[in-house]
Length: 599
Image 1: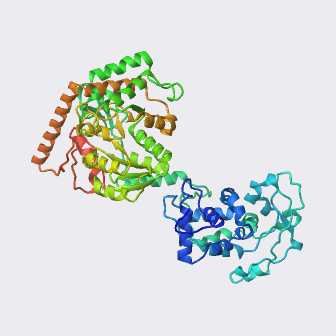
Image 2: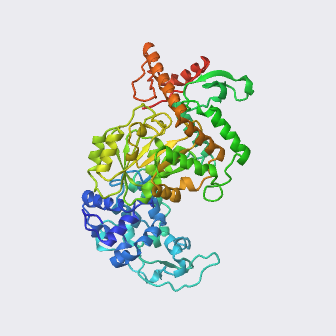
Image 3: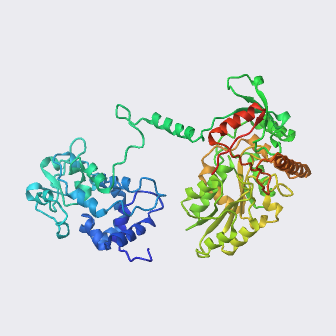
């Protein structure tokens, strides 16, 4: 499968055996490791295979049929498992290890150790245990064994090993087992056959762990500290992680608020959570995403109360079982209508909507490649990562760089371009038209996150895509119900078949309790209001407020950065340690805002 190397089935198995059991990466990484062995250690495939005492004994045709099973059992081998742990301590996202681990040195180290005696060795062999019902473990009496050191290994095996007696092939004559299910072969003076690590790994001395560590690298200290009793001290570990957040000033302490529906954007602040409700300090909230106060709109509140009285406060189950209500279906029709798409699907949040949708698309589309804007939200990044699909990152709002990356792939390969319309940290608006044009040119789907745009832009509040007249160019749109619409939840819209596939396969949708019906009814009513003439008036007032704020900041000579959206970034040049003090000071001045540490 590797066009650059002609590999045999046996060499392919060798690579799989040496890999950690990480899903979906074993189809590409083994060939990379083979190439590294060939280039850096100048070892041919046959030479590498000869180093393994098991691979040297079996024909390639056997490995061609049994490779997957051997890979599975190999991961349970006590010796190989240690190597797996040392080879990839950082998880499957790390680059393949090419120099730290030497297969030749590894086997040289293990082969040079004398075996243990006693009944504990053979009975603990994971390979023997895995196939115990088939009685595949063979052994020979020690008196019948003879040296079996290959010519290729004589130069590297220690004198101690040369003096040892290595067993030859034989058949175990003991068919009985002890009461605990362990084989009696070792107790009868029998030894495991040959040099297969599955059979003799537990016969080596206890020092094998230290020897292997010295061979492949320095010993790694436990990530979790040990208590005086030798147990893992999890609480200390958790405390250290919290202190690390405190040291870099990223630890967050929640400010307790009670927003006032009749006095938007006012709220009561409670420095002490034990305070009575009416003792709260009056503040003005400057950091809310409820941009136009729809959470307190009388019609939205009324719709919520009506459904609570009629249907209660909970959905009663997942959407697949008993949790799909009339109000869910109506809300999904409403969001599809808003974006002029065939279908919609609602989620518990837009974070879940992005994660679940991108994960599902990347898994379902064969050989899918994601093209992600460098400034995309964490929910999109995590969704693409969970899909295990390949990802290319193009420069922020740079269609030219996007095209450069797209050119690298066949036009007939599945591709998705994922980006946002309004970026929350900078206030930038993406060049939707140019990005869509490039995506269409290379047969790529477009996925746009309109979270900070829905309700605020466009004639009906459908976002920047509607304002620019590009809604038909967007294949998948995600939006939130928790910002301009003032409620909570998220959604996607697209073609009927695409949405139905996500509905049928997305774990984030299937395995969770459905949105409360009252929430769905409130969100639907809010969308209807913002799509009406009243909504257009609210958007005009909101934009006027944004312009006024920019003017006042400029007059005060504060470093407010220009942006084409309603988001006004204000970069504060201040010592990091003072950021939390700034938040506290703002509350003392009856203004609540939150400082975000970025970069």
